[in-house]
Length: 484
Image 1 (tube, rainbow, N blue to C red):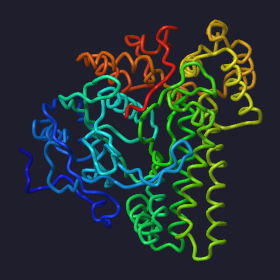
Image 2 (cartoon, helix red, strand yellow):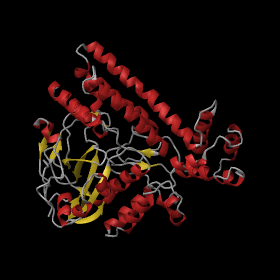
Image 3 (tube, rainbow, N blue to C red):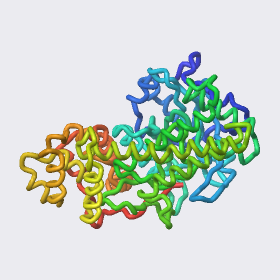
Image 4 (cartoon, rainbow, N blue to C red):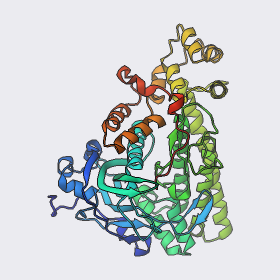
């Protein structure tokens, strides 16, 4: 058993007023079993991996045992879902266990997802099916390996029970880790309840957790808003640069810590098309790839509006300060995307015409229906002394000739850098679906192999060449689902 004399968790969010959450124990499950345990992450979080990866640890991550030092709770929040306001959301199938401090002194929250109903479940069962749990585990860890800010996956367990969806499916629980689970929707909640005191307490908690250097400054809440704007601008730029489509950018799915959160109907593009949509519930394309920056700014404007009561005592001044903060999004996103795109074609120090050349590549890829990931990776490995064959195979002969001519015969191209930003492997949708189907039958070999491949996405691994291949026509995934 775990040593109850030395709590491994804190409970900082539980120290906030009780209207911030509902205390709620997890619902025990029948026959839990391990699917995956992230030993390296556990060690970074200063958790004893040997002690945790036991039957006692399994009981914690299955919700059958409450670890010492924790106060399991479901967080309250509101949100705009596909643009429609819902004042009463909250964690309907997730429980915040507590928090831990990593080796660098950074505090992280630990949350169970799929652990049973809460007061916010709205008649839902609070459970998660195996497929969505595995999808989130694989994608969040793959994103981290690619250097994208994200929540992490600490554990996945099978519940030994079925969940009722369209058909009965195996149940599972994922344990995920975040700098915090405070969202734009959390701020909206207190505005919806006309609770300025609660709003200030939430902002103070957020500063204490994420921006402690702001304490004691003249306008700490305004500076908090500006930093959230900056983090989201850089996050969404990083999504665009790897072809990631979140799929459900509701305000309750936007982390103030700037981490990718809530992997529902998310997916990666195969063929490059800015209008790409995967989510089965996004019939109007609100969250299409090309719309993500615009929606990101809209979500942040909602945050700014929610914070107006604490930005400045004068309403007009508060509005002006908020607008200035939101206006910074476009410039920060554009710079992050521009710099990142140039790196993808090997250019570190921009010169006249470089960015136009990069945009021309995207236009060419769209016309050619080229694979987004493979095109950039192929350019990273192209023999610049004899590019004709590779360019013809892509097909990008004209663009490659312009690229070489524009960069002094390739002298300004840094292919080592290109290989560090253009992944060879991504969690392709057809591979994820195949993995889920196999796991549903009880075969987790594809899950473990996929995790191995994606752990080092920037390394060429000929033995795993099949994982670089786009889907065959009969393998294409046209829709992804939330899994609720």
